[in-house]
Image 1 (cartoon, rainbow, N blue to C red):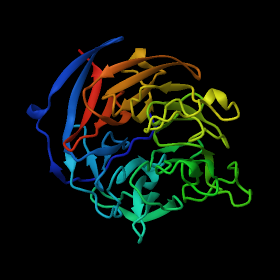
Image 2 (image 1 turned 45 degrees about the vertical axis):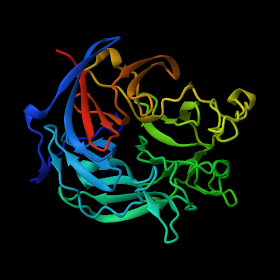
Image 3 (image 1 turned 135 degrees about the vertical axis):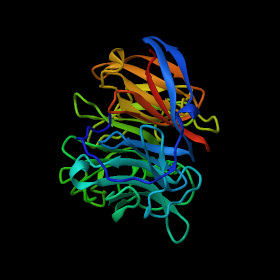
Image 4 (image 1 turned 120 degrees about the vertical axis):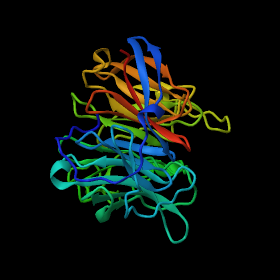
Length: 376
């Protein structure tokens, strides 16, 4: 799970859509550990992008076009939550990730990322925080971080949010399709930033005090990270990122490290021009696992619950191009194998619910929330 939250109960809640029980469908799929039931919890979402659980078991779900909704365990979908900032919903941009504060039961605060336009039409990823004081609107909305510089194009915004054990906020930022800036720590393109809850840089970030370097940066040399999670045992930040033609990676992120893009990759450029392999540049930090051909990973969660006892300790990765859920088996920090569970739909996000089931958001114009549980 991304974040463990304490119990909390909301007040009244008006819904725009309710999915009758008869309209829910269910199928099953065979896996290495037994048969898994796949239930459609909710449908009718427009390209859902981020999925996160509130303490009472309901879900916050972002739609790429700019809407934030709450989905109940019964599949009821709220009206759009008011006061979400205007997003640049073009290309790969839009309303992206969402995450409740680790102290949500006390502060009712959520964080969300989105593509933000400039007056000149350029765009970059922004991180905002707000209070979800009721079930219909956000209050005290504040943008606490903006990727700089904003650039043209609609590619590679990232972005995932993860909270460290000490409350620090990690935000992943794509290279915006610009390649070389990911090697330049004077901007925040192709980096991971580490922030306080108010958006200020953590005082011991690796580039604090270095001339012209951005103090928010935690690591750099990244291409397009759309999966991030904190390891439940070690507390380390794990991410995966999309390569070009192949070379999708899983990385364990350490302070100040350079992860190599675009100097090295296990894939090749879309033009077919090869890229130097990571093994040729030992001073750059290599991935612990990679996929070639590409599966286009998106969404990621560690499984640390009890409903799937044989999945405990696995890393769950959604796949857009692969149209599947990948269960990556681990021995400490080493990947020991993987199981590919075909779902025949683009998986954008992955989370583990309070009930121990695995929940998936599908990247479709009529997007769904799927629930995976052991078949009875």
